[in-house]
Image (cartoon, rainbow, N blue to C red):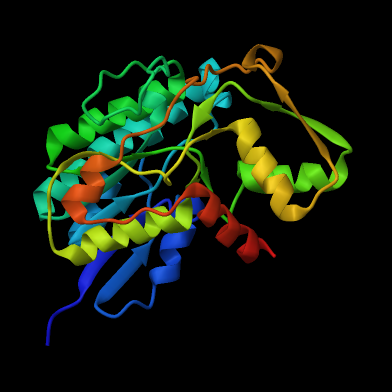
Length: 287
């Protein structure tokens, strides 16, 4: 009988971690789901001890400081750096020491959004925000200490946690009209689809380290995304398109962050659903 594959998941209470929890009873896979109360990622010794004790074959790092605007405040920068960068280095080192494979989740915010075609993993990076800069540092540390699979994603939503879809559903039920930014373009990502892709990589038995991109297929603006949500909820709420300039935020966002997914599709034979189909699935889950 084949032995089970042991997988450590960090940040398992977030959107992606919560979707990975749906695989808890998959035959042949044994999960250890952790959060900040069970594994202190800000301490190198704690990370090393945990991985030494567990001896996982895979570590899926979903832990991240994602309060993008708050991260711009000087008092929050250290925390963002600790979770998004330093902790990734600790995990990567421990994975290298104890023979685990690291799958690390990163972001489109490593780019500045000035491209006119989908970003390839090899394209030059230029983060505009503290969040983007700390996530980039995490990528560098992951690759420095071990042969990691790094997956950049964007515009993540799910039935869990706080996200654009749930916020829009709530606002559209409360207000007669809302304004949504119409000049930032990207591809929404249903966390359930990303979780499925990660499990697919683990189960493939193939290990091809490097940087990959994963979002749902197709592209839209935040306004287009909101209109699709409005249509699915039959909301009478009026959705008005506005420029980014009319909705200033502490952190600058990339104006264009569509990601080229060819590498992950070819290397791991992954079929990616269209964002509109996945949005419908999520909306059904939300009821």
